[in-house]
Image (tube, rainbow, N blue to C red; front, side, top):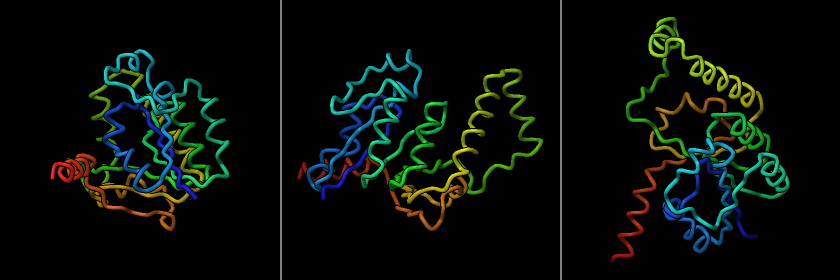
Length: 208
């Protein structure tokens, strides 16, 4: 049976992305059907989305309605799929996308690169932490509303058990506190350098 991958992408999926993620190689070498869901019109600001200058990849499914996407996604609930999810929870639509991915029985792949400046231990959100944030943002209510909304969305999603999840990362010690909501028995860790490194190896091989 032919393998099937669905990529959930929050930005306009460009020709550059198609090359970067080595989609052609996935299709040919591994006999895999790759379906790309361009969710930029659901996740991003429409004005910002229109300003994208890079050439958009034509081999994608573009969604302009969250209901249409949900119908499409739920219609595949009985299929055996690998979901590569790049969508972070930033607004209501991205929350719904992640919520239904969490409820599905599909295996989910998440790329979680470690920030070289990030401490291995999480920040302690004590009184000094919040005072510092208030000193930075003053009475900018939008900033606090965004943080509160994200906390609420994450809280709801994390109340549901995760499906089998594959985490790709270059440093698992630094991201250990980020994905603590995922069931350890269903978690697979894969050491991952970078797309650029992989692309350069392919280019080097072709040049030879």
